[in-house]
Structure formats: structure tokens, C-alpha cells
Length: 469
Image 1 (cartoon, one colour):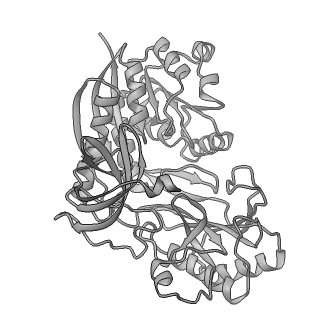
Image 2 (cartoon, rainbow, N blue to C red; image 1 turned 180 degrees about the vertical axis):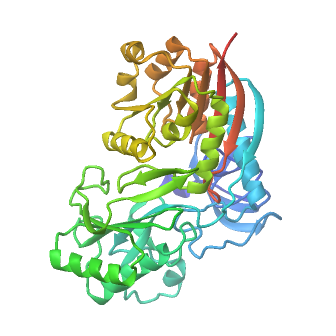
Image 3 (cartoon, one colour; image 1 turned 90 degrees about the vertical axis):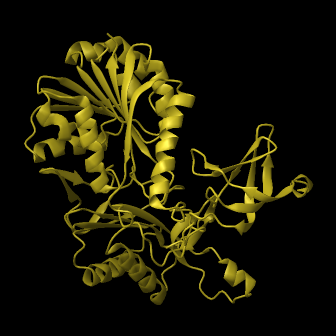
């Protein structure tokens, strides 16, 4: 504690740039300083919270002079819930820093030469663009600064909303979220009001007790809505009463599901999902294709921008109809099915068995007959025997998780040597690492960043690699 007290403060610090994870950057005596909650152009007083040889971390004590770019936050929960951190930055500046981030990662981390950087593709929708949100119930909500300053009497400590960053047991009660369109806010607020008026217990995150645990709301571009209420205690009467009231209040909910999860964590992948009303899935549509989305399915959370992303991937693949395509980390087969009509055959591989079942169903749903899907660990499935059996791919499309591709997978790709690789990434840093490994045999022809998540620091990046001559 004494060490923390001795950490210095600095006045009139000019914020000059944005780092890869969204923190702002300043320099103090040639030492890089990372700060949250500010933007380039802000002049601030900073308390150092972590001091290392090569960098500092700090928190803002006061904004002495705001940047000329600074906008007022449009969300009442800004700065507390942890989401939409860049809403104080004009959107064109958000795109500038995202594009710069993707380029810097490839050139500075990957040390690779990219022949052409294409302009970043911004999102048409800046708010209400998500098709899925997950909320947490808590009996110990986050107490606001105003409540603390005013010594307010806390009569209601229940919340349903988002976790406070770095505090697993504190939840911000969200009144209105700007990320998901109607009826998301209305459903969440109705459940909270109903639970309070009927004395339902909210989850005690530390002690694992209470009825209401989580809420997941999924919507589709064609107007369908899925609601999954996750309970901790299995009180059949209370569960039925709440879900009946929810169904009566929102008849537009086409898939009303519930789960009783008494595990230590919130994941539902291994939990039984019970259908209370309607179907156990919703349908998403994209370019005359339909995709079945279940409660456990992965689907890009910005539906409209996902369409733009997949069009770029398909364009980079340059398919003529004669190619064998491997779609690595295929998920529910969205990309595989999306490009199938322009390929001879598409083979998708994914770790999650349920996702592969969804991928097969999506092919059947769209009368696509030239796809094959396999479930298992990528580094174990994608090997020389698999390729000998199914054929050497002409094109590989890979869309790995944030950790990027396992080195064994990269090695297999290098032995296979497809003509082209289209690498879709949600983390340009790990993409850069993988590109460096692939660059011994491939030229990196194009790179294009795509903004899937306005007002956040996250950016997707699509890269085209072609086998060296």
C-alpha cells in the first residue's frame, strides 16, 4: 500500500495517440504512459497506478483541457459499464485509429510487407447494431459516484446489466443500452420490474444463491427474437410465472427458452436448454441464404456488417467454381455456406461439435450440397492424413479466435501450400504473428480493416495471401 502511495502524479499531460487495446497514450520523459477514458488532444492530470521500466499506467484525476475532438457521451452509463469506450471520439476518428492499429500490428509486430492497404470499411449502423447481448443479475449492484457523494440511502441493491470492468461481483444496472434494438431494453427492464414486484431473488455472485442469474437476448434482421433466461435456483413455480408474464407482455418473442445453471461459472455450452414457448432457434438471413441460430450458436454479432465482411473474404478468395476450399474455424458454417455457390467444394472444420451440427443444418436449409463439416481440435484434424483423404485445397479461408492459429496449423498450411489464403481476424496482433510465419512462402497482397463494433477499440482485419511464384 505504501508503494502505491509513493507513485507520482503528473500535471498537464498531453494525450497523443491510441494504443492497440483502446487505451490512450502519452509520454513522460520518453516513457510511454497508458491511460483509460481519454482521447488524443486531451490535456490531463494523471495519477500513476503502475510503474514499469518501459511503461507506466495511470488514471485521470482531472481533464484540464478537453480535446477539440471530444464529444459528449450519448450513454448515461458511459465510463462505468465498460462498453462503448470510444463514444466520445468522432466516428471518422475511430475509423482512423482502427485502421492505423491494424496497419501498425502487421508492419511493426509482424514485420511483414503488405503490398496494398485498402481503406477501412466503416459500419453503416453506429448504434443498435448488435444481435446478441448477455446480462447478469446481481443482488449487489454498483453504487454510483453520485449516490456515494450524497450519502444516498440504498433501498434497492438489485441489478440486471453488465459487470464493472475488473470487478467480477459488481454489476451496473442498465436502464438503456444503445447496442441492441427493440425490444431488448424493454424486455430487460420488464423482467427486472416483475422480479422486484414479486420478490424474486437476484443472484449473489460471491455466495452462489438466488433465482435469477443471466439473461441472453438475440435478435435477427428479419425481426425474430430469442430470449434465454438463466436461473440458478430451480423454483418451477416462479420460473413458470415469470416466463408466462414475459410471453404475454412480448408476444413477438419467437423463441422463449430457459436454463437452470447451478455451476460455478456462467457458460451455458454444457447446459440443457428448455423451450418454454415457440422454436428453439431463430433464423438470420444473408444474401438469399438462411442461417439457423440456436441458443448456443456462434453468429457474428453485427449482422449487417458481417455480410460486408464475408463479401470481402469471398472477393479476396477469387473463386471461379472449380476450387476446393478449406474453411478453418468455420463456426456454424456461415462463411462456408456463403462461398459454397462459387466453389467446387467447401470443407469446414470447427472445434465445437454443436456448431458443426448447425453448419450441416444450414447447408440443408439452403439446399447446399457441396459442403462437408468436421468437428475437433484444428491442430489434430487438419493433418497430412486429412488432406490426403479430402484433397489439397486451392484456397484456405481461416477465421480463428483471438489467440490466432496454433503453430501446428500454420505448419500444415505451409506443407499444403494452397494458391491463396484469406485470413479473417478479430485480433490483428495475433494475425500479424501468423502472417510472419506464413510470409516465408506467401506474398501478402492486400489488407482491409472492417469495423464490426463502433464505439469500441475492436477491429476485424482481412488479409489476402498468395503463394510466391
